[in-house]
Image (cartoon, rainbow, N blue to C red; front, side):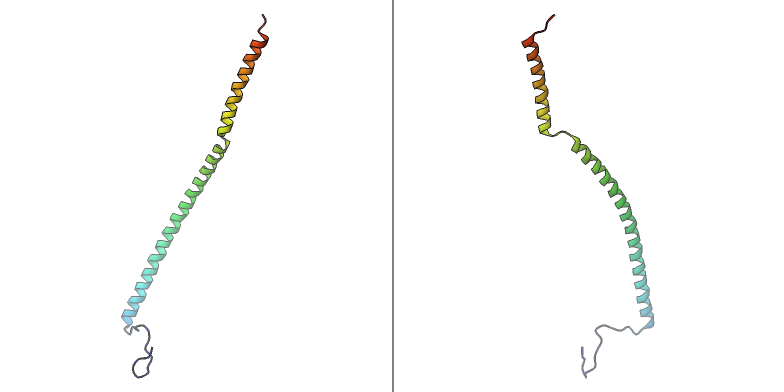
Length: 101
């Protein structure tokens, strides 16, 4: 940007006071230190979260395995019908051929 007289002016203010520059650098360092400390805390929390997530994932796989072993509705219906028909066939055989003494 050119100011009056053709001299370029910087797009930001330049601090000329050494104390104010030092204060700005200290404030920046403090801010960076706080951010790094917060990141360290977040990383430790994330590590604990990841460990808990792995345990939940293992438990879910165990539950899925058990559910997969459960019989389906068709298996239950046909299995019950098969047992019922088997008992009826046995009863019919007893009636048909009779029980000899």
